Image (cartoon, rainbow, N blue to C red; front, side, top):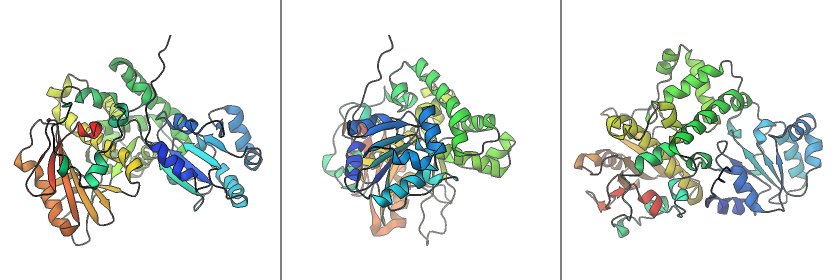
Length: 415
């Protein structure tokens, strides 16, 4: 008998219910198998469920979008809506005729806002929420308050030892990633699931979001990017290594972003900051997928520490962006690097307010580890609100100045 996949609390459900209270259409976007359907079905039986993975439903919606929408009950969940882009125009007309809030919940495993054949944007009628793979806080059944504590300056008031230093379990967390099906398996079976997952996306889902000429080239690109997660993105170099034109390599990167596999983290800059590097960083969204494609194992933690260091950076970026979904969806995320190669792994902004996050895999924080945060603070002036160096130790303490702290990685999930 196959063991059922455990269910975990998803704090984003609060944002979903809030949006449904005043918006006719709410679209829940995220990678396939991250839990969108499970979350949508927590809304209860008042929402009828229709999946476009079912051929009969898909064919009806494709051949007669208006008739399909007219036949829907008062409230409905429409799953994998990216497979029927023409349906959005019919939904727009239905919503314009009846603006009651909470009518439709759409889910999509591709970013509808980036699709070239999008039927209609439903602008002004739809709110978009992004569901990420499970975060470490969700896996630990904790509320995930690290980001809110950083934004509200509560870290300074609560400097303390962490209850569970993460060093021993950290490689396992990175290799498992956040997909519910994968984290429920043994490491060997999780790797098999990751490989099958990527194969399905490349061979099937990618064709729903782009005119893909060569699926094998996309697969090779993903494997190469898994080895470069957390690094500056050089599309020309990628294309040369894969014997692809720059335009083709960039279009395949777009496919990875549309399917929520990849994230381009743009560089932070102020107009007056002339010395800043303006190249994006590339991050895999799920560390488990990246680790499997890169061939990393727990035993590599000591022997391939540089690879794990980049993977850890991508993992931390993902944890904080996930917490933003239920903390403050208006936050924006960047990286910082200047021509002196001084950098900050993650820059968080809300308007002009700015925070910085540095990531270290070591158990100690050295004085030089805060150099990037100091440079960021100089660039921001009074807009700099604080920063943290997340590391693999067990105590939180202030670094130089009143706004920068060394904080254990475990506080990402145990606060």
